[in-house]
View 1 (tube, rainbow, N blue to C red):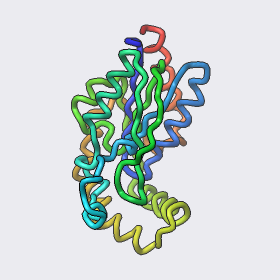
View 2 (tube, rainbow, N blue to C red; view 1 turned 135 degrees about the vertical axis):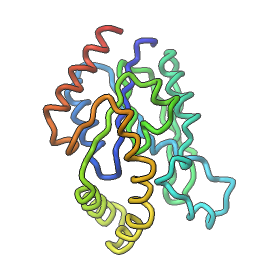
View 3 (cartoon, rainbow, N blue to C red; view 1 turned 45 degrees about the vertical axis):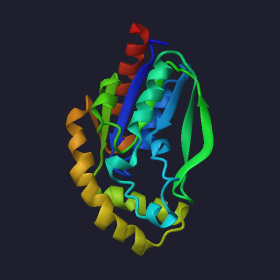
Length: 207
């Protein structure tokens, strides 16, 4: 399927990437479209002890197996079905469970480092950065992690200040310069999402 359109959506934790992706997918109803979350591609750590795995910095580019992601995307573009990995957050390593993924008209690659790797960027037809103020991002992360992941407010704030914020400033924010489109305020920016969706439809027709 050489006509596959690949869209990259990046941005900091809590920026609204998932909301933007959901809006796009709903507006592209009728097309074959699917999401590949970059989080699926955290590196396998089965060769490390559990204690060593606990030290993993998931907000650093080195945490991701981009080689496998790139290989899977190329296979999908070539019309091949692939098995996409999943991650076991309890054991902090790759799960034995995979997701069977078939070629689509549009594939969205969404993740904090979606625009960080040059080879991955070069595979993308449109590169998007979701840009949201830091205060909103930390509040969203705080609500998500306490409600959905059973974490305390103190632990979320400590991790944000010690890891998430410095990693964002060092690695994620600079990838904004690679974006074809910057969407402020995430899923609430309906105009930007409409423009992006129109562009995607035009690319599909051309291919």
